[in-house]
Image (cartoon, rainbow, N blue to C red; front, side):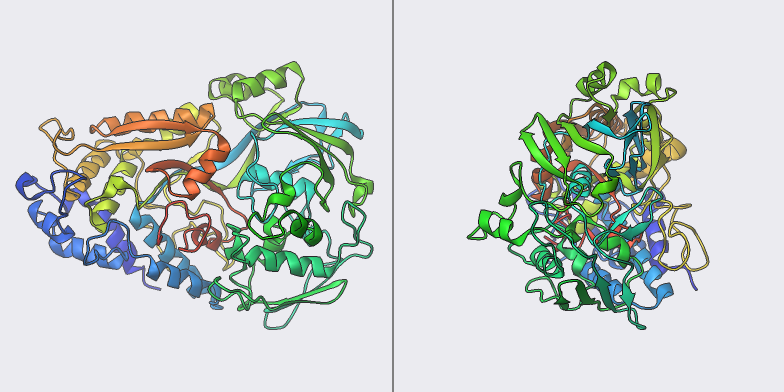
Length: 609
């Protein structure tokens, strides 16, 4: 198959140092990002001596055609249409090609700036074993042992105060871990990372065409209050998750279900013909369906408790905001001292209670990794899911320090509707974001902050992810070749001054002026706010980026917020630039792509909004 034309245009744009300005004409460039009237991409290109044809072709090819009103945010309808077509595409080769096109379009906006591919470091007392995590970052503590024996209490820190404990509303990795230990769906993961039956009595029965599923549930399933858990609870919970009034950020995961439609009024083809049987129909075969069924948004919630706590439907998560709520997993939340601690106790009605080896899980709620380390070293906690950046070198060779693989990407995200891009066209705003990406030394961040051999991310979809066609997605082949080696750009650590020069030319294309020292002119400054949550690692990465941008005179202020405020400000678009991270929910590239659908609750970049 011929290499994608779109990739060639991207490569051309990324080599902008040879295509754009050879001496900017300041008189024809916008005075600043607050300029009253924007200059079109074509006019700016002409002013800067750029190759007009290449610029125009690039703008059109990546779906960033400047609108008549010169809006800075890209028209995102083509992306939405493409991703929705991927859901129903039964041709694996064509589907993989479309996924590459979708990532091309996403990366062309510059709104997603990958830093490195995740791995997960944590501290654990050497007496403990048997707990495990999967590559999606979900941690399971119910089968842990201390010195090889069952234990009364496992003391843990995962994060600070959780935002949601309702599995349909959670969007954080720590929240997913809490859900996995207190709720369970039809399927779950084992210590080998395999999907295995949980509430289900076996793997699904699937029709010959791969679209109709029948799942039989175990006998005698109970909620933690002793009431029966039946197939009707699955039907209620999934319909609740897609109900717009629930406002689940993950409702789009049901897009592949027949009846989901555009999500505005979903009527899933979903039924419980009897108390033990769940049936549903998909719009097309789905190779990753079993993994979806193990994800928290597919876990059942107790209808009576949900509706009693929220009779008028205005606060769908009210039922799980204090300790004592009904669950169906290994543990029940017994005590919750907000912003301080949580105590989960063993649920005797859990289907696998006989094999649960820890009676209680005690969680320290804190984002202060210095205090967390002190608690670990004093023996107050047995497991710490964060390590202060300055202590990694001292701890990484100890038996208590662990690094495990993840499937995900740590990145920086731009709010495409930010005032930062006022007065710019979509292509100029994308050029600004691309320029900033070229200025960041990712390898330096890994070496000085990450320190656990993370890999530089040159694409959003991470290395190691399956392609849905029997191979690995991030591999150059005859069907697709990435614009630059195995990604979308060379890192500053490799490209050096060439990247800085390209960044300057992209900023000139966007209308910015530079002095003879290649520093931004005082007449066209760039000042931005970088939003991050607390934590020495996140803050140190922000400082590295701040220093890199200062090389050309970009001023970046760092704002730190507590976890809950941070999550909500990102979701609501209350930021210019923010630290982001995405651990895959299942092993398929569409999971990395679908989060940027216009109707996705995880679309922090506000694309299409």
